[in-house]
Image 1 (cartoon, rainbow, N blue to C red):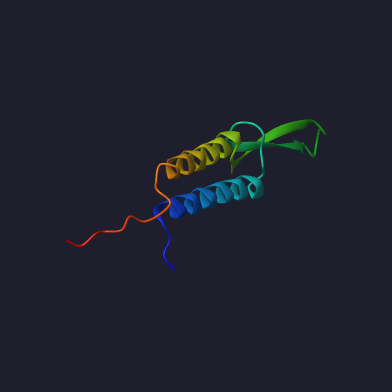
Image 2 (cartoon, helix red, strand yellow):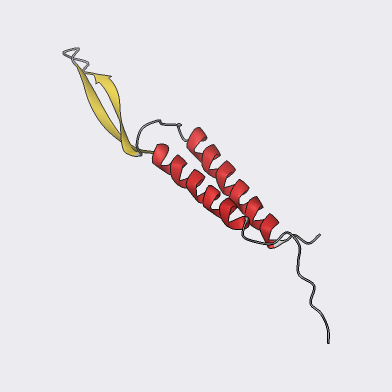
Length: 92
């Protein structure tokens, strides 16, 4: 089975879009910017005072989602420049 360059570009765009969306969704689907740490509330055992502890954790935000979506749309738009059929090479 032989694919045209147009079809391959569209499949690549679909792969990038689905991979980026899946990675963002299963990594936390944070609607803010990307975070390299999260704050976790903790309670002091002796005094009972609550405080926040910073834990290092990478959470991709909407900037990664926008990057993946934008890249896939650029590749899809570029695929429109390719012809639908492979040109026939004429032998002299």
